[in-house]
Amino acid sequence: MAAALRFGDPRAAVDPLTGRVTTDSYAGGAGPADRCALEFAVRVAEELGGRCLAVTVGPPTVEEVLRDALAAGADEVLRIDGPSGDGAATAVSLCAGLAATGVTPDLVMCGDRSAERGTGSTPAFLAALLGAAQALGLTELDVDDGGLRAVRRLDGGRREVLDVPLPAVCSVEPGTAVPRRAPLRTVLAARTRPVPSVTVPASPDSGVRTGPVRPYRARPRYLPAPAGDLPRDRLLALTGAHTTPRVPPRLVAPGSPAEAARLLLEHLRART
Image 1 (cartoon, one colour):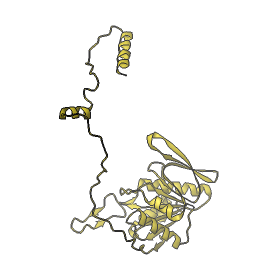
Image 2 (cartoon, one colour):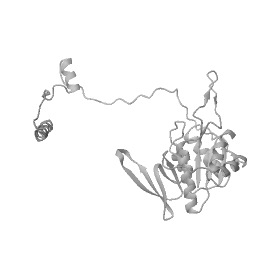
Image 3 (cartoon, rainbow, N blue to C red):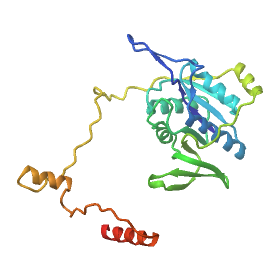
Image 4 (cartoon, rainbow, N blue to C red):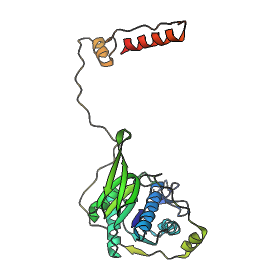
């Protein structure tokens, strides 16, 4: 079982002259969704009798994320030195790094999005590259009869229950699990444990060129012109004013609760 983590620094500093971004390895770390993904990976590995591998893409400054994962229950860690500019590049680096070490995970757990306001596209790209099933945006994940049973949030307050076959790539929302508290013994042991790394080359240029970044502009929708020859008539048609008879408000003084209920019911019937 692999947990794909991403280092994020909420207090990253940007040089106003050069635009260079500097991060602090001790101030940053894995986001809430990534910590939940690590907890699920450790749970599934324990229930299915497997091992948990925590992996991340980045320079040596991101090793703090992996040491925290070791302290929280991960059996092994791996740092991949490769491109991670967007979701597709990160997925390519993860697949290349895992293949270089001979690791073929049955389950890859990811956060639904990184703490750096990411797009959440890495799990989908990763599932496509690995040829695995994907279940994204999960709120629950349990082991059921040797497989996985997941719950995904849908619009309108609904939920979708999924039977997830292995191998699979799953992403979870933040707050779906309570990450375990690392004991002091494992925290101290993780400080001195070496972090293996592998370097993957950058993928060849796809030939796609992007244009300048512009503000988002929604596509226009066709709306029929309002009826009316005069501007006032068209405004009334657009706003819906004067289309229904207006009932002026009135003040009533019922003499008893029963009379008040009767007047209220009459008013509701008249309005509906």
